[in-house]
Length: 147
Image: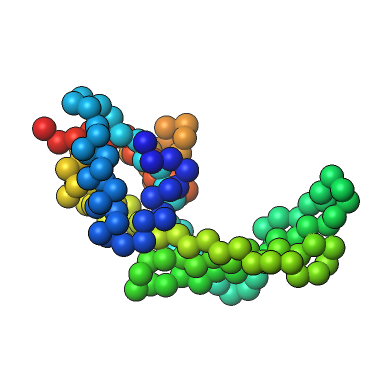
């Protein structure tokens, strides 16, 4: 299993294929492999680049007011979404946390999994086993090795 969108931290095709080879080498005969990741939303990427967005506001147990704002920049050449979380405490800038995520488009990832020797048993659009559609936020795969 590669859960929690972890695949997005494999930034190159080489890294992805190395990881999938390790999975294939460790998968028992007849075993299944689960993979979940985001389904890229182009409209969200475009809109999110326009301005900084507030993604969280809360008060800590000791009374500090925390505000987290997000900026994003999608690099088309690498398919990496560069995310920065700007943390403010009591109205003053505190720190920046970076999160880079490689995006995998649906047909692209289907092909990579096929090339890596996996059959797609099921592909869902959510954790409740919803059908995968244009509106799906997730790509959830149930995979097996090809015979």
